[in-house]
Amino acid sequence: MIQSVKVKNLSLSKDNVRKSNRDADLDSLADNIAAHGLLQNLVVTPLKKAGHFTVKAGGRRLRALQRLIDSGRLAGDHEVQVLVLEDDAGSAEASLAENFHRVAMNPADECSAFKHFLDKGASAEDVAKRFGVTTRFVEQRVRLAELAPLVFAALAAGEITLGVAQAYAVTPDVDRQARVFESMSRSYYGDNPDNWTCNGFVPVTYLIMPPWLRTRAG
Image (cartoon, rainbow, N blue to C red; front, side, top):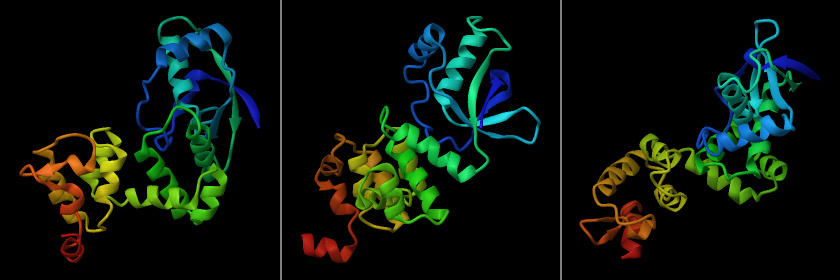
């Protein structure tokens, strides 16, 4: 259902899938909305308080609108068109679909979002078909969602690259991942996992391997 809602009655969903780089180009987006209006409806779900909604897709647009109101460029009671969804799972999928093929999402956001759908009962094949990627891509991202918390946090913050995170995912042992990460953090020589060394010569891809694999690799 499409309806008009005052911006002040909208809030950003805590589970909006784009959690990284939320301020990227926000000023230019605000300028565009000021000049041309909101060209794409926000996707929302209703809150318990009548007339209030949480935004599931369009978080950056909401923040741009709020910035325009705060600066006086839009009226405090400015209204926008929204698409109201009752299905929370559907709105989460809408949020991911909206962001996936636009400005690249942080891989950590993709990991969390795909895992969300799998936890809700979708198969990797279902998720892959919905977003136009391979099943292998989905499985690789979901594997990263199981990284040690400090490694996953580093990926989300952009402190390590996707390649480095994938090197840690070689082992499911999160304690080992954490130990190697702490060691690597003291001797970082680039964003290629083969360049992340300990004592100047042992690559992270070797350190993270289970002992039996390291024996074969050596």
